[in-house]
Image (cartoon, rainbow, N blue to C red):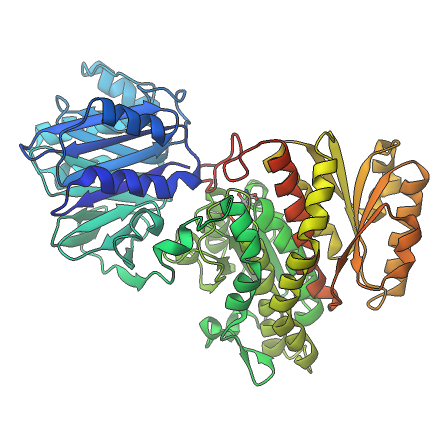
Length: 615
Ligand code: M6R
């Protein structure tokens, strides 16, 4: 949601801003705009509803004078529809000051009233214009000190915001602030950048600075200054981005999603790398943090969407290996009741972006309640890891498609690692060697599924392009994968889909089965539990008897399912906790192929944003 770019340096800024916005397109947006201070010191601005191409066309038709100080924005509408007028930047101080914003200013109505009473005339319906007008008034009232005015404004705002501002009387200066919303600094040679995430400037620099909560940054071509909201200097942490611009390019693939599905063996391998020592799982980031795992009596894993399904797999793994009770909580439900948590609770949050507002708020809430917090995250410098006591990074590389695929696999991998790490620390895993061998074998097995099932599943999806509903059934760790298979299908192919625990079937969902209803069934290996396997085979018989079209995902050599399946998708043999990483792959391919067959944009599905930075 909302992408932000800022630039100061020697180069003309428009192309830099537009390229940065293009790299942030994946976040989801419905309008875009740029403001530039030109070579004569005048501020120019252009904004357009619709895709970035509309803004580019407008700039081509009527060019804006260029200059080397600029800000750019992609907006995902919250206050006011996606129109030209509501798009950012918003101007104030006789159009000499430009402001862009991500987030929601919760006290904007009161501030708007105050400004209206002062004679301010608003052009848009946005909360952002209120911040711009407030800044304009402060600036005019304090004799033209932009940083000072900016500080007093951010101190009056409530809610979540990343705010960037520049004034034509201060070329070469962009100021920014963040509260519960992302902002990262890119450090260049004689130039500096600001971005919602590092993708905004990755083609220019991989050196970045993470800004903390309630901090303000000023960038000029040669300096970066970070303070708190009251002006006290803050030491920001520099880091090197571990991927380059090419990693965030489509690179010949038909879609980012296709590329990211194919990158899963690498994502899993990179997440495991450096975390296995002498046949044991040892996560270096958790070195010296054993107290996080000892003396706890409960783990809560909190996340949203796909990450919450990874969490469900993590529940099984951590309970099995670390012998501690695990609950999975949707982050947006967690803090709106009165959960029983305290110093003996470990709250694990999972987020690809590290910026999901619901998850961030759950982490903050857990900390306030005295719980220990650990995050699993794919994005360096993101807010959620900064708000947690510890972080285990997934190394999936940048995930651009809205539908999460390789990040999901990396999250499950990280949770398996965490479970084994905790089991070692807590002394509940006597011998991890078999599980460690399973982990190490995963990348090759995932690659095998991709290779062997791509064509088959794509063909299947082609046949089912007119299907109006698909159901997914699973048991044990297959249950979260059934939920994930349904979510993937819903979000990119707009088909009704639901995932169920297979055992629930007779408690209601079986009423949905009518002749021809497609049902994917995830069959656990009989080698893990003959009983659970036989139960799932019985479930298959029950739906088959009612006319369902049964597509089975089962391990190679599972002959018991053959008589009852219309289609069988094979996955390699793996340990019980490791099967989800193999079984999810055909479901991702299926959703992608079906959406493609329907002519849909698999990377940017309607209504969705990659990074959900508002509650
Ligand atoms: O960045 P996060 O992992 O915190 O995002 C959580 C969900 O919004 C995300 O997984 C969403 O469900 C995906 N679009 C699913 O493909």
